[in-house]
Amino acid sequence: MATTNWIIDASHSEIQFKVKHLVITTVTGSFQEFSGTVESGETFENAKISFEANTASVNTNSEQRDGHLKSGDFFDSEKFPKLTFKATKFTKKGDDFELVGDLTIKDVTKSVTLAVEYGGTAKDPWGNTKAGFEVTGKINRKDFGLTWNAPTEAGGVLVSDEVKLIANVQLLKQ
Image 1 (cartoon, rainbow, N blue to C red):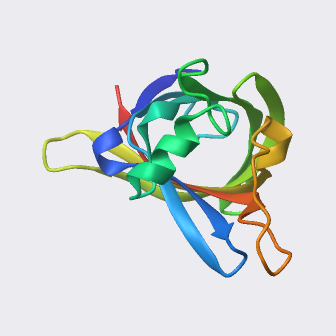
Image 2: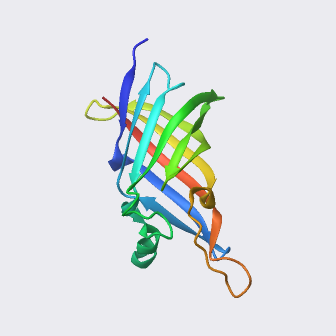
């Protein structure tokens, strides 16, 4: 069976996370620098997938918060410049897929399961073949050593443990 190699088209992709702040609102962040590869057969089932993001490229639209996220309280970007994901299973679930893989943040690797919606494959005006996917899931940030928090006056916490992951990815056929 022939394999097809793909890379993430970063100019048409977004890697985001959402975290509750003060338990009343959601703050969205993203990584501005990331890359990934996919090796697939005729269909994407059982594809080999790898991804990495530069932790120092985190952006939440707040310079002060971004600096805190890059510090040892969170990503410790100086010591751990990349977070990585490597698929261990990519299986068809109805019209979509389930992605299981090893996510590494800092020096902690945990298996995570993500839902993947396949948007389709198309040719762009320049003849390039593209494939689109939306990846969603949740992790507990404390599982990855991201444990910093602060209590609030009302007895709650500043940052929720649950982090929603959302990636809209366009792949470029090589």
